[in-house]
Image 1 (cartoon, rainbow, N blue to C red):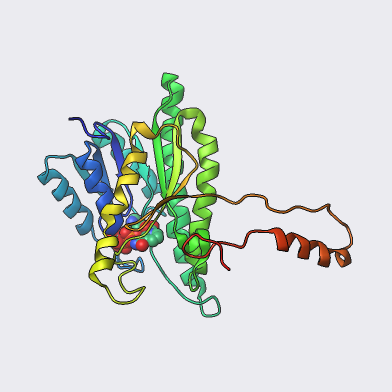
Image 2: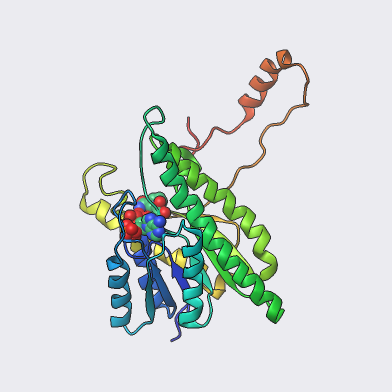
Length: 300
Ligand code: NAP
């Protein structure tokens, strides 16, 4: 039986470890040819070594699949372009870009350094924008040359830390919320070429999260297996998902959900005198839904 992604060509950034590695393996199981990108640095993004990407490539080849390694820093403009070019050179085309690479530099706002802020914003936000830009330009050219919808897919990575908000992660949360907005806008822009853009807010026990959230119990290992996250990414990568775009999926061993975006809540007639606003805001506040907590539910 043909796989869900048979013959499709996919890039997975940060594909050497954690959730990205699982994406690569499941995409290959479903028939995709995979460019496994990984910088090969430490948890905070320092250093570089192609080892983790090569290991995943070897695993895919051992199961009879096709894959190549790529060591680009996804937040570097030219290296991101080189990664898109490598997919086309190696496999003749590009169908899917999964922007998954990420780092953490958690710190309370009052203690956070400029370097910690800049590093996280660069890897997540520019590391989403740069590959997406080069892939989108490639798909636009293909659409113009053939006159056909290209069936491209961009799958970005957000986080409940951004869309709902987690203490100690103003840098990471700002980047992940930025990726949520980026996803909605890019989806609207690229629809005309036949490219969908969605995001996943994953939950998994990986190098990124293993020292957060208390002891690693058998239950945490089970529900934290990235195998729970990969199916929605692989489905979004397939041709079957053509009608789904601009959406945020939460995916973990405990949840598969669509996180709904900002909506306008209670409204009032605008006023020009700020002295009038006290009771007006109080009235709107009494009607407005509370912001969601980290579990996606209203705070009480
Ligand atoms: P992980 O195991 O640390 O994997 C992250 C991968 O990103 C690593 O392979 C890393 O490569 C790669 N990477 C980092 N900076 C890069 C760069 N500049 N260029 C290319 N690759 C780079 O963490 P993970 O948990 O699987 O995280 C994957 C994504 O899910 C991240 O975007 C993360 O923010 C997001 N996320 C995870 C969770 C969770 O529960 N695990 C929750 C919410 C969101 P090297 O380390 O080898 O350099």
